[in-house]
Image 1 (cartoon, rainbow, N blue to C red):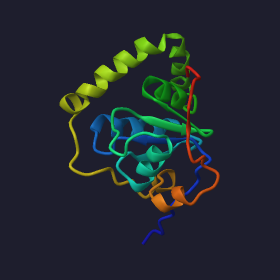
Image 2 (image 1 turned 60 degrees about the horizontal axis):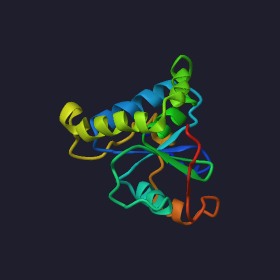
Image 3 (image 1 turned 60 degrees about the vertical axis):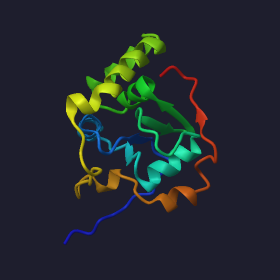
Length: 163
């Protein structure tokens, strides 16, 4: 039987995603494949870790409207979070980061439209994603680890960086 290692590396960028959303899970699959250095870590918004990080970011515990990227003591959401994640992907996918030149209001309008329709278009799971043995080191799932860490700010500052 394989030993499963749980990571509590909270200094890496952490992408919070809707664990029951098929589109969101496919996005995580894509990032896992194309973040070949394994930099980005993941937690579902519904997990203890996800809820603890949402709380630190000042977002409601039932927030599921967008991806949330926790990075360097700041959080970003919606299109800005997606574009910041693109920086960690191998080329040509990392080039998507240049879309930050599109005004945030326009990017986020498209993001919100897709977000509102994601369950209808792509479906929804009955339960949250369970990482494979190979993915396990990329997923944070120990909520206690977040609440007991001193290196995560008690209040995460919203990013003003456009991407």
